[in-house]
Image 1 (cartoon, rainbow, N blue to C red):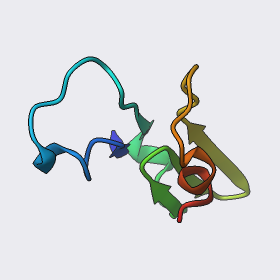
Image 2 (cartoon, rainbow, N blue to C red):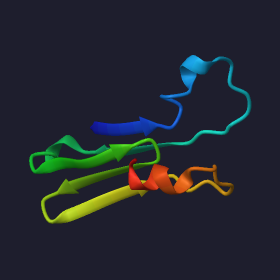
Image 3 (cartoon, rainbow, N blue to C red):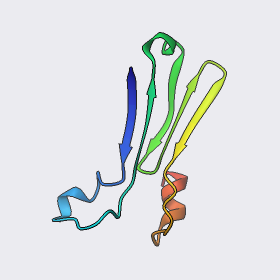
Image 4 (cartoon, one colour):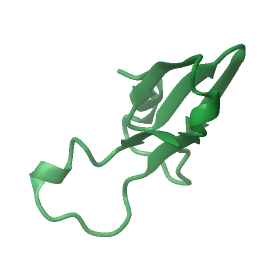
Length: 77
């Protein structure tokens, strides 16, 4: 298996002790036998986009309560 993963905690881990579950993460696992034509299109804290041949896979973390800058997070800013 090949894994592409991203966590929204990457930027905030160094700020101190974190409480609760305010962050999400995404991952895509792909079997090695189909990875020959795999291409990482984009990877940010709340989404990952890969292409395998003619197929595009998008994995998005959509929390039930948003943050103040949620639109920028999904644009990849």
